[in-house]
Length: 254
Image (cartoon, rainbow, N blue to C red):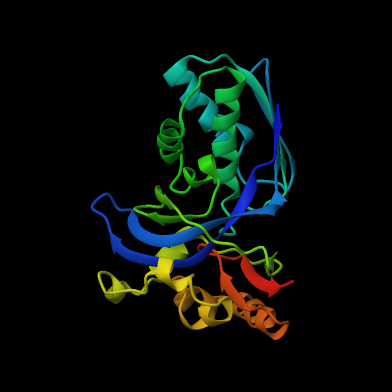
């Protein structure tokens, strides 16, 4: 069975506090982007994981797809499978590619072995793998809170815009670096309601919707800041870093 896990962008990203477990609570709007995706093939067979396309920095056995299989095997006793991942979504870019691969693996295994799991169950399984994995189960625009696992579907029509995604060559932002640079004085402070902000005209989002990670990441990575500025210079109605970077997206009127 072949699927095409897609990436996501964040419209706004507020880190609102640190949790006792060491994670952070956040508010963001996840938007699926289907123009950039991986190819995932899963078939019953001897347990194997092969990776093509963009080279990853982990061994195949550590891939999130394998973690997803192990979780389903432990919970539901599914048999072994052969997994092939053709990687096109850059990793470590804030695009959620690995999370998408894991969530699509869960969905595929559910279908392949006729488990009949509902969306809530799949989302719970996905959340055990990664913070934003749950989003890719329903794979629809959602307001996310908690660690990114509490999802409220919302209507947002961006059909009038092209979503262009780019990454400065050679740039990578470690998640640890991004979180260490956060302005913790903003924790607990009132913030713009992103659900209300997106109801405003897109060309006003620049003054309403922000990604908290930009405050420290852009000065430390001038190439990312320059790419965002170029998006606006090229006519973007709105541009932002997505997640903790290094990818930047722009919304361009068609």
